[in-house]
Length: 178
Image 1 (spheres, helix red, strand yellow):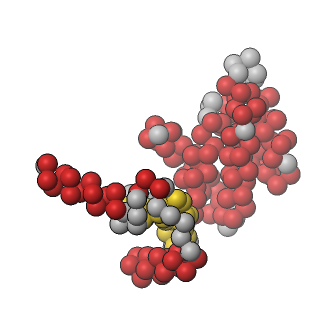
Image 2: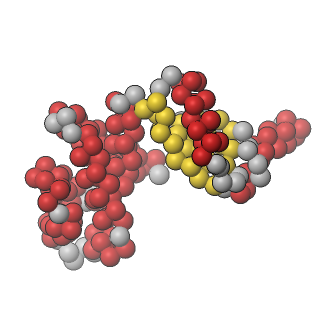
């Protein structure tokens, strides 16, 4: 995972700089999301991995599927990735781009993983608390993981706030045996 992250970073940063220069972060966000979805398709992934299919042909197919919204710069970006055998990095590039975009917009990306589904009121309360703590707007993704037993784990960047029962039990076990 960290290798993918390292390989994707220069591409994500280059696209982000281009998007900022064009004052078009939202459009690039949409382009990257679409490209990510395209290369994640099993049939396209097989084409990308097939050494008998030339990179230019794969890039052309991806550009064609993406449609007119991709634009000339988007098409050029796909071609650069294809030429460098990096098309499979598109999902990671898109994720890193979204992180850079959120930072530029002053928004934090948070993941709230709870043991049980949260109500909208609970999510709103957590978001309000995170806004107050970090003094920034917060955009959340919510997930459910029953193995947490109870409570929730909030991840913001490399920070983890573990309020789960499972996390508390692991801390107690470590303290007792540590």
